[in-house]
Length: 215
Image: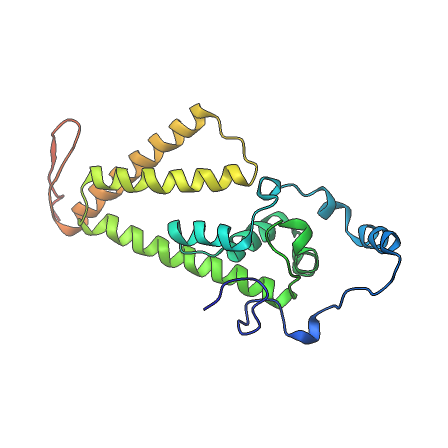
């Protein structure tokens, strides 16, 4: 399935030709540009989350994400926008869809509110399934503590890169602290899971064997 924005065969892509707005045929391009700028909401004009992606092509961004995650570039961008453009009454899906090319440099088409909602739902569904798959692997005993540490390190590196692309400034001390906490949590998950399965676990650092608790 083609994941590029603008695909006419994918219901998650911009809506059908009925929703497409033809370019203005006016000969006064300066007036048209000024009018278009006036129609862009102030918060959209000031939005700089994806400014580091100026000049990027959708296909390249999508290829990077698909090689490292289960989400597409469209799903990533729209999920981020839905989090940023959330009000007390809900997500501003119409605003996101109508201003998508202004908000995200590598998105070239506008979206209907329904297409925005579908992309957000697809992102959430993939994250949920990926989380369940990883947690099962961590709890199943298939991997050693060192294996899980390596997996979490690689996953954390990808996540940190995406956050930095979105403009988040990550201090080295904060990164190391987060990695240590994640490693500690995963070790606890493995030990607790072994107890549930009735297996013993040897600590990779001190060598102590944790016996399964008796009923």
